[in-house]
Length: 176
Image (tube, rainbow, N blue to C red; front, side):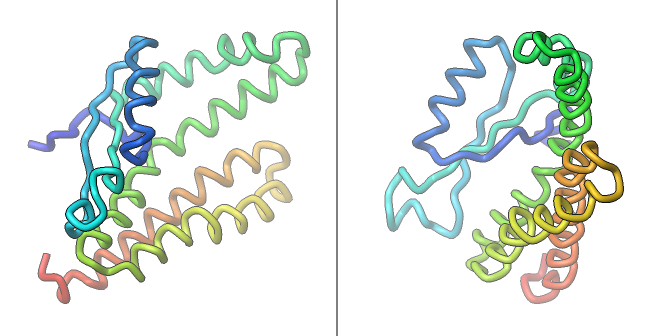
């Protein structure tokens, strides 16, 4: 059984910031699982500060985020009906990116743990720069303002594809 069944990855943060994030989540009553991450003995060489933590939240929080898109947007931009509509729609579309983001983060961490920094860096670079920039430049031309928010979801989907390709392509080398 998967120990993260029913959870989706919220984020991965350095140990220094993980205590702050854990405190914020706890104070807001958001259940989470905090899991330390170490790659290829890095902590043994540079100390505990190099260790990161992954934060997982229940998948139903995604549905809650989508249902609360309008009320939460109302808190911040309720003074302008047009901006409220834009923000609520953006919140709803962007929330799907959280379902996909964990796979590429895992893939990058996985290859770091295997001491393959080049592949790890390639996944991170593709995810955070290449795919996002390309999608942000193209998608708004096709879908207008919604294309801005869809671009992040598409970039995450492309990062999942790239990560899967690296995992598949290097499976024989690492024998997994």
